[in-house]
Image (tube, rainbow, N blue to C red):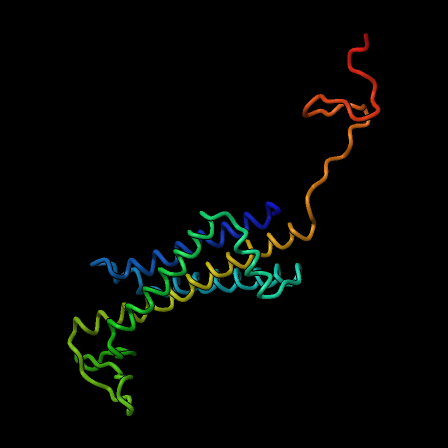
Length: 201
């Protein structure tokens, strides 16, 4: 695999891990103010967009289908595959936990000192009143969800880039060393067939 694929995939995996870690920070008490500014979300969205666009460009260059990329991914070192899969599983687990924790309540808002959320479980999607603590928890959950999704997308882009790198390496085939015209192998010092002895007697 070329070094550009390794750097590209490694950087994407690192950025995805950072975004997922930021999403996990939402469970830390007192971390809610970190999610109030808009710039972290915009930065994560920009990283996900660039990661996905560049990964698609890599795939287009090697002209590989899903099946080929899947086989190429299985050719990656075990530690690399385990790390990438662990990040994706962590992101999916956080998403599932958010869905269970919210209990179908979404879009929290404050009105005249009272707190409300939309009950998505009911068919009418009624707006129900919730406590302040529940409102704050839903507010953080609403911010954590997009971070989790974007983090998984970035890690997925890393998987695609590394798999494309494996396809590229396979297409090029094994590297055959050029023959030593001096008649002696530089690595082993063994004469090639037909070469003169090293120390003629």
